[in-house]
Length: 428
Image (cartoon, rainbow, N blue to C red; front, side, top):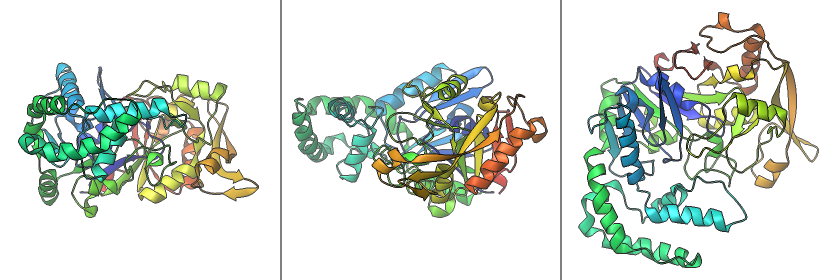
């Protein structure tokens, strides 16, 4: 049986939560492999709605859930999210939730620095101010405090020296006092018992699961266009969001990634700053945002909305090696007489079939649109091709042609069962 890696193929917010939940029911293990609690996944299970930002989506079904080493973990948020889900009746124990021992921690001064930078700069990246970027900086700077360090707090002073040497200088530039070392150590001692019971060598347990033939589902956060290398830099997140990160971010190895399922909205949205060639700052954008309830799960920020961009999704599919896509929110387009698809760009008289890498060029490209006929019937709740209007099927088929990647499944509402399965990723 194939493992499955689920990634967003646009700028995030594509509806990964529902798809992961739908797949998690048949998975034996669900793994988060990058990002932090800047992710936002909404799961609708029966009459209950769960909003997750750090925990793997499998946890609400009792599936073994793993937070890999590629994630940066805010231990206080972890404690609170576990408590919130427990209040909704979800059982969470060290038996069904594991955290990589080598997972770096997000600390209070990371959150401080994130907010200070956003407030001070005229060049707004649009971060969630949750300390994700600064925590990744400390990881690659080899000064991070990790989960395993919580079991060795008495030996932490040399690492704190390195952190303070770096951060105190940055804080001074913002007229902020130095890090309170005593408070930091006390805070870590207070939170350690909430984290350490979950700490495991997840690379080892995932290897055992793979050898036993168990189905492993890798759950990505954000979207490919926010990848720190391949996204719309510098308006990106601070981790690699492409499918290959499932390997480095979990310790399983590149052969374990399996079927790569890219999640794609039937239109395009983006939260925060950065280029967005097909953005519709008009009645169409308002229609999509209102009908699609386009507000960020984590921040509540209103999402920018626009037409489907086949150029960007084709680029995402190529870079991430996407095997098939899950097309979500098709029902939001119901009732539109005309639907547009971006099939290329022009810039200074030159035609592009990809998004150029420089931010200034990305901001100036002009989309080339192809118009397709809409449909008046509803697609909401459809669970088979036969229940879809003919024009909706034509729209899906045209998207497949343009992105050079097949549709694996179609989602027609937030309800998990309102899904049309074309090809089972776990059986591939």
